[in-house]
Amino acid sequence: MSPLSPPLPLEGLAAIVTGAGRGLGRAEALELARLGAAVVVNDYGQSGRDGSGEASATPAEEVAAEIRAAGGTALAHTGDVADHQHARQLVELAISEFGKLDILVNNAGILRDRMVFSMTEGEWDAVIRVHLKGHFNTTHFAAAHWRGRAKATGAPVYGRIVNTSSEAFLAGSAGQPNYAAAKGGIVGLTTSTALALAKYGVTANAICPRARTRMTEDVFGDFEQPENGLGGLDPLAPEHVAPLVGYLASPAAEHVNGQLLVVHGGMVAVVERPRVAAKFDSKQDAFTYDELDALLTPHYAERPAGETFAAAEVLGLKRG
Image (tube, rainbow, N blue to C red; front, side, top):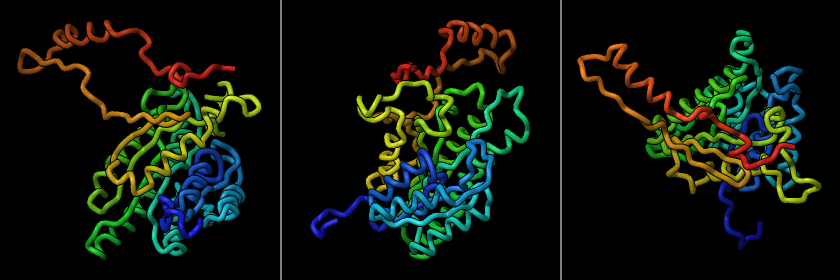
């Protein structure tokens, strides 16, 4: 950057991105670095999207090296964010290397897909552990850091949390009860964190990204991709998601807090909190079975059949 160039939006800020060795996390880490942040690239590095395989430092180190090669500042961390002490070490690494932590992007996750009647206890626990506990672990230590700094100075600090939820939570996903539950829990964690940390100057928001990655190859693998670069960027490329993460991590987003946003293919949708769709009052001291039957049964019977999320229609994509 030349001396006359304006400062980058995230210049002077330090960030952590978890699950940043591949896919969405990689794109997000590169985007934060492009916007000026120093980045700790975290990835446990297991080869299987179900969390199987030996841990490897290679994915995180390659992304950190890519950032440095482009003139940015980055280092790798290869711990498991679902391990409480590894998460503590991750946050401490950012603080010791960069002097502080300003941005936390929680992205790490695995899949263990199965119908609820077939899912094992281990498959449930593994996904909840990595997604939901992993988000909590890093948030806990980052929040403690920001609260301590704010109390020491008597003034708000700069803090941004961007969590990764999913439309599997919003609309359901028949073969992913563990994943959908974890992603719903992440939204609850986000809104609670947003309320708890607002007085310290910290915001917390969640995104529901759609992207073609190792995690979603079964879902989006048969949607058309541009051939030979024609037709522009793949609508499901992770690079469509990363700019929103960069924005939410920036000073410009100081008034965005406790929000849930869907993002993909050049589209951002702000999701409202649940609203009451209908309300029924008992004409007595308490409802009876017959009264509820007379009120609720017609209400649900009159709703159009199949009011469910249709990914292909919403995405506007064609299957190959």
